[in-house]
Image (cartoon, rainbow over all chains, first blue to last red):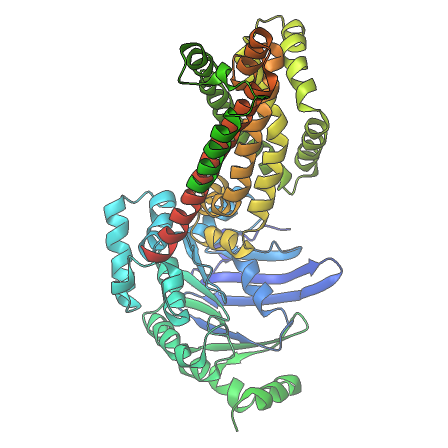
Length: 255
Length: 247
């Protein structure tokens, strides 16, 4: 794998993926995927299940280690070593479909653990930071509760706040509303819209096309581990190039 | 538990009247019986000390053996398998004899009866603790590791703050079982001369020739001890349960 010379890296391109492939056994989850994301860009990734959407973003924060190709974040190429972990920890936050809050810790402890242990913040600094982000996701009054005492929508907002407490440059969302009851989807999307408007670099895997239209700069459609369509949002919805993408949109957009 | 105690004491009183029993050897109302009874109960200290020290050590060893078993490295996993299979295959009595008589020769050291007992019990039990920890840790959802990764926690912090606190709650009943098991198995350490409950009873039998009464008291001593421990473990479980729900 050739190192990309520093000079060639556009400072604005915070994520560069080049011909990234990922195999699970013999199953190819990603097939030579390339994509660039600039600082502040909002990307929404959609596609049928099993198309590699989740694998794509999981490779960006190395929850899955890619088998070939290169991923560069903020100018640092990820090579599976300790240094690349540091790069991810400094830059990338992630929100999961199943929230993955720590059930044995209070909401506040969920938020402060990372900052205290890995960013060397004092307990009081971390608490202040945590309350600030709980304020932002509009549930400061739940700070002392345990995750199981909250609704799904509240839990997901806590999960978003927990990631924000690490003050990442990039936020990854892996179907953040798919596990939620319908009436709770909007409270989570509202928080995400606000985050997008604040200039956060975001990559969201979601089927919420209303949200996508509203915030996305770039739309990506994936199928069988490949990026089939990658275009600016307006074009994506009005005149996508690929037939497969047109069909997919017809299936999921409300009549 | 109070009910069981009542039944036991009632049985004790009833049988005291029978001609075939010789309860006088442990009858607290006569001076000789009281001395004998005190002598028997004096073993309690070592039974408890031995078991508790051994279980603490075996939990530590168990954890240190369990963690490599969960690694992706096949050599580390191999170490875990070999340790568990080997240690599990040795009978506790054999382990006690080997540690007390064999180990000092092997290493050229002297070892007290107490520490020989502790080491033997702890080693024997550590293989089971390792399996319990492995199962407990494996039962934690992998999303917890992923979330831990996203808040930049390393392996040690992830284990310490995220995985083990949750795993230990789940395996507490199994750990309680092991403590009960340990209390019972500590009776085997009497063979190398440890002055615990069983040894005291044995010595008294030799001087008093009343095995029926003395071993009956011994049996009740273990029963009582273990009922107390079980109640303690259940109380702890309940407290942790309510802790995480109603704080």
